[in-house]
Image (cartoon, one colour):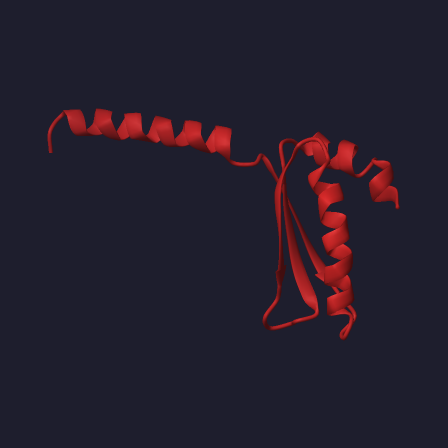
Length: 99
């Protein structure tokens, strides 16, 4: 192994950290959402209406809604926000969330 290998490794690690800092959401909200059995389709329809409201909030990055295979009446919601205040103050205090 040459003497330049550790320097090359350090350069690669710096690039990776910079990418992670700038391209990955700082805040990841997660929520387990239990749904009354038999009401899953209605929940998914309601969530489809709510999704653009969430996506329109300042600081929103992306979201995923996943249905649990083992417990089909449970969903996992993951929402990425730019910063904590975008979620706690912006979204949670918005008139849309209050509805």
